[in-house]
Image (cartoon, rainbow, N blue to C red):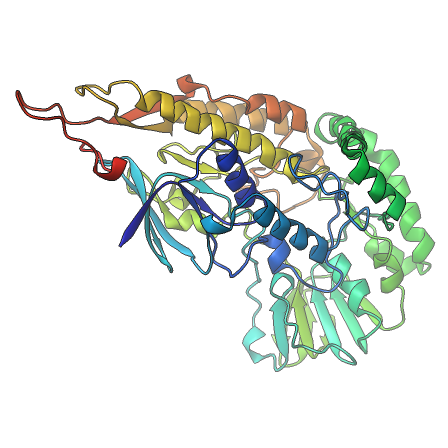
Length: 519
C-alpha cells in the first residue's frame, strides 16, 4: 500500500525537524518525516564519541523559534543538543509525522502525475513535494587503506563510535585532525597506554572559551526572553562582521594566525613538535577549530604525532606515507564525511531518468542552494554552497525553510488557476530552469574566487573532486536570508497536470481522495 502525502521530508536532524515545524506553522499537516534511524537528532544522534561538542555558541546554535533558556554551557555538548532536538519534536507536536527505521532507497519523479514515488525500508510513499534534509555530515568517509582487512583490532569511524570498545590501556591510533579528532584526542588520551595521531594536514586551533552558564543567567533568560534574544543577536552580529575577512580580505586574517600560534606555543614547548603542528596555509582556509585541551594532550608523553597520513596496514602495524611505523590495538577514523558526493544523490531519479548524482557529476549546483534543474518539486536543506566557515548553520537552515514555505505557497496559487486544456484546478510543479541554476552558480563561484577557502593554499572538504568549492556560502547570513526570502517564478518552469475536460453532458471527474489527477 502506498501512502500519499503532500510533503515527504527526508531526515530528522536540524533541517528535517525545522522543515516539519515550518510546515505545521504554515498550516500543512499532510506530511511525513522519513528517518532511517530509530530516533531524531541527525548528526547529533550519530556522533556520540567522547568529548563530542559544538563549536558554535549554544544560544546561536538553536532555532530562533525555539529558544532554550536552559543551555548548561556556552558551548553545548552532544547530549545537550540531542536533548534539545528531542524537545523540539515533542513541543511542536512532530511525533505523529515521524517514521523511524524508514530509510529512503529510491525516489523517482512521476512526470504524468507530477509527484514523487518513494521506496523506503518502511513501505512506499507518494509525495507532491520532497524536502531532502539528510545533511552533508551524515555519511562517514573511511579511506581505502591497503591492508585494513588484516588489522586484528577494532576499527570504527568517529561518527559510528563503538561504545563496547574499552580503550583503557590500549594502543590507539587516531587518523585525521578535523573537528572530531581534536575532541577525541584529549578525551581518550588520559586512559590509553599510547595514542598515535596520523596527521596529514595540521589544523589551525584557537582556544575554546567554554564555561558553565550560571543559574542566574538561565533564570534571567526564562523570566525575560528578550535577554536571550539579545545574547543571540550579539553572537550573530560578531560573526557577521567577521565575514569580510573570510570572503574579501583574507590577508586580514594574519593577526588571527599570530594568536593561534601563541595558543600553540603556550602548550607545545618542543620546537620540533610545534613545527609539525604549524599549518603552512592561511588560517580559515580550512575550518578554524576550537579547543583548549587539544595541544596540552599532544604534549603528553604517551602521545606521538605522525606528520603524515596513514598509507598501509600490516597486521597491527600502521605505516604512514613517510615510512613511520606504529603499533595499535584500535583504529579510530576521524576522516570526515561524504560532503560533495552525498549518497542520497544516488537515490533521487529526476524528470529525464538521470539520478541527481549523474546530474551533479561535474559538481553540485542548486538554485539558491535548494532546487536542482530537472528535479521538480524537490528541495534540499543545506544544499550546495550553503555551508558556513564561521557561524551557525541554523541561520542558513531557517533561511531555506522560509524559501520552502514560499515555494509551497506558490504551488498552491498555481494549482488554483486552470491548467492548459483544463477547466478546474490542476496539480502544479516547479522545475528550476537550467539557465537560472547556472546563473546563480556563476555568481556564487565568481564571489568564491577571492575567498580564503579558495586562495588560502589548502585542500579542504569544502572542495569537490574538481577543486571547485561547492560547499560554502561566500557571503553573510543576512545576504542569504534576503536571497531566499521569496521564490522568483521567473527562475522556474511551471509544470501542470490539469483535470481532464469532461465530455458534453458528463460530470466533471474529481481527484480520488483529493490526491489523484488525470494528466
